[in-house]
Amino acid sequence: MGEHKVKRIGKQEERMAFIQHLLNDVQALEQLVKKGLIEDDVVRIGAEQEFCLVTKDWRPSKKAMEILKDIDEPHFTTELARYNLEINLDPLVLEKDCFRKMMSQLKSLLTLASEIADRHDTRVVLTGILPTISKKELHKDFMTPSPRYDALNEVMRQFRGSDFSLHLKGVDELSVTHDSVLFEACNTSFQMHLQIPSHDFIKSYNWAQAIAGPVMGICCNSPLLMGRELWYETRIALFQQSLDTRSSSYAIKDQQPRVAFGTRWATGSATAVFKEDIALHEVALSKPIQANALDEIKKGKIPKLDALKLHNGTVYRWNRPCYGIGGGKPHLRIENRYIPSGPSVVDEIANFVFWVGLMVGRPSEFDDMPGCMDFRDAKSNFIKAARTGKESVLIWKNKCYSVRKLVIEELLPIAREGLRKKEVEEEDIDFFLKVIEDRANGTTGARWQIDNYRKLTTGMKRDDALVMLTKNINDNQQNGKVVNDWPEVPIIKPDTATLVGHIMSTALFTVHEEDLSDLATSIMNWRNIHHMPVVGRSGELVGLLTWTHMEKYRSKKSDKEVSRVADIMVKKVYYVGTTTPINEAVELMKEHQIGCLPVVSEGILVGIISKNDIVSSSYGQGIQQSTEEIH
Image 1: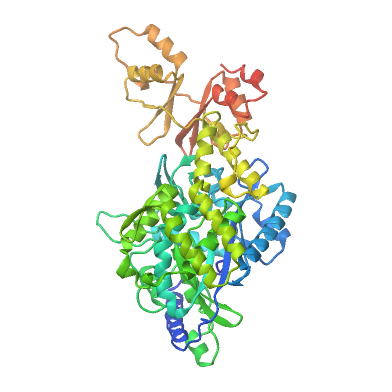
Image 2: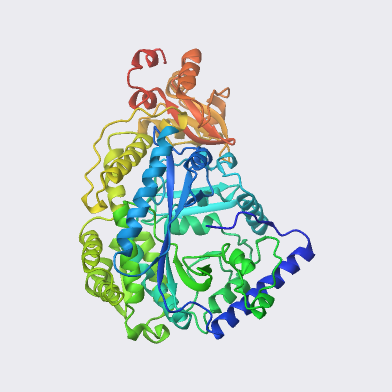
């Protein structure tokens, strides 16, 4: 949970003062480590559960603040968007039935959230990326009102010097430019914390980097964004690009993104990773700080290191080092940020058990990571696992392993031994690691979504498929099943489409006004389409060709006559936006006796809606008589 009472750095004096506090904090942390003041004799676990709020028709809800107010429970806090909230679970000593206790608390808090949300006609969904999020929910009015989020948005845009550009490529592609950091709000995760002894921090951190690829590969749950099938864990690419402050130039420059895996194994003391992030990344936010950390240590007090923690919170390593104070004692921990929310609570806790078991069970041969594994293999494993999940082939100890084989043959035994070493109850070890083993042999959340989405889109519109997918994710979570036991989604059209953007066709065939009219005629014949938008060179809508119009023109045209699209297109075009209600589009089509309407967003053609789109959608059920009046 980030600090909310922050702001952009303003005047130069303010910037210099904050940076001085930041440097003092690093020195103070080094002194805490050298003097043995870091709590090293106990290992604790903790977690943060991010979750989505959806309306009764399974679309993002804007009621997070109202729900949070009514929950009135300190474990809950806000997230960047109005359709997300976060639960901060209590830290527990790593021993005995700690994971069962954590799961019990998480279920109890999620039940509370669901009960309060239901009063606001809202539901709770756990998923890495909510399938039904659209561009509409990324406008600034969906951002949670908070000084931190406003300041973060402003400073990231200032650093970048332009709008944010996303280009994600998997089976499908998504290319879009956006004017805020709200694409980051599409990501929801289950962030896992493990306290690390200061004397073992660098070895543990490097080991966390080494196992990140295979751990993520077996936990992927975010394959879809805006109806596009992208990476198995699309959050990895989306999060980096949504907060990417780097600028492009004609010169080739090595610039490190604020969201990163890293470039090398860590070396030195426990403060080395913090120092690197200060050296690489400009200070983004500030807050008033009164106490000098070095003076606090001289007085025998434990410093809060507010400047270091604030800066650390704006650098998004997938394995992030963290400093904190618990029970009056300072500690260091590693925060695992790459695990997605969902598919179920049991799946999440199993992911946690697997990762913690691996971390505390590190074989001695991996104490010297540079000597046994090339960092670039670890980074490559992470990227491959994000792209293709359990189907990836990874490099481990200079050999090729499928994720399934690596998890079952190499990593599960290490995790089991580590958990036993910490005296976690054998029954819990068996139960949760069996969930991971079954998933390795069966289905991950990402694969379940992909298979069902592909099946659904063979019989219904994209939006209807996304709605049904989201509904069934929620249904299965309520039933308490792990994802490997989730059934197929039935092909039943939901009755939730209300806006043009929900049912429009986006796979468009277009022509330019300077093209030959015969080209347009040929394409319409080849593809059996009756309407073709005409666009300018920047994608703006400039006209429309219809089959009826083309037929009339061809009947009058001589064989030798050559014409351009601009000569025959309809120039007065009625169009709608993605957020236009479908019933208004129907009335517009009836009023002007037209069979289609181009769909325009911010001046650019993004789709087309026809009578067939309306009739074949969930909205069209029961209104055929009305649509029959459209020609």
